[in-house]
Amino acid sequence: MEKINVIFIGGSGRSGSTVITKIINYWRGFIGLNEVCYLWRYGLDKNYPISNGELFKESTFWKDVLLKVFPNGTIPRNQIDFFSHPNLVGLKNIVRHLLSEMGTDSDTASYIKNIEQLYISIAEVSKAKYIVDSSKTPDYAHFLSSIDRLNIYFIHLVRDPRGVAYSWNKKFRRNDTRGEAVSMTSFKWVESTLRWIKWNIGCELIKRRKGVKYLRVRYEDFVQDPINILGEMTSFVGLDKNFPKDYFTEFGFINKHDAEDISVWGNPHVRNSEGAIKVKGDDQWMKEYSFRKKLMVMLLTFPLLLRYNYSLFPTQKSI
Image (cartoon, rainbow, N blue to C red; front, side):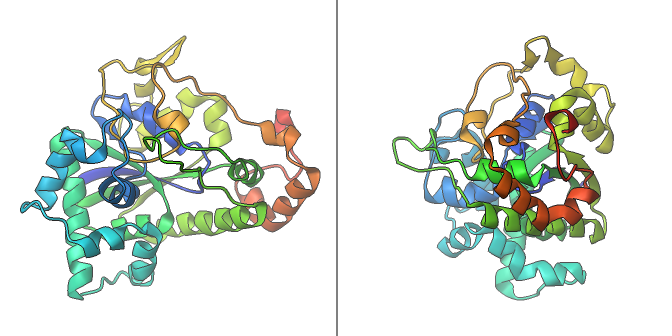
């Protein structure tokens, strides 16, 4: 039975996954859906608009997908509630996953079956050869990695934790909730740094999963040379390294094939943007983040900073 190719982008939030997914969504044979794990909470439960402006429940694409998952048209409330918390989905099973064992209780089996069918249905309805899911959370990735029909290409996206902490500290409202006042999630530096450590260690553990293919890339390298890093990604999934060049012009990455953007969740300012995509660096934290906070983040994360080849005391030239 043919497996479904899933390119899963994992790592800490505020690391550039939305822009990478949006660029890849322009490519023929790919569908970039950003944070699929939030389909249940923000799609089915909240009915927020998808990237093209349609309300989730009015989207022909998602109607067709979900009808294949739940043929009777009824989606059990307990499944919506369960999958609305993707970290808990993974944590419930992560120990079993690392031991290569799956639970046999009926609820777990039902959840696994429906998630498996979700990705199969996305592939069938979209006709895409590769599904790009930038849900990021390693717990959810561990959950997916135990589904036999999914061929997981795991891209571990890393960004300097000082830039991540600075970004998480920003406060602004979302522009994709149809008038409902919803702010972007924000964290103070301690919480965002601890999340960065936990999620990146969780991503490292993915390498232990049998059958999961793993590639680590740095956000800073992507910003400096997007063609080369995207080429590494296409080579990683078995395609020509020069594939991304076909979609790049002086204006940025373009949508040559009028690919529809139907993603459910992600950074709204990137996800809902239109036209060519220009990759721009975000190094405001170098000047605007206080030395004290940068130092504290560095002290908490320095083993991983060194592992990921970051300078402990960077300058703008060194990133």
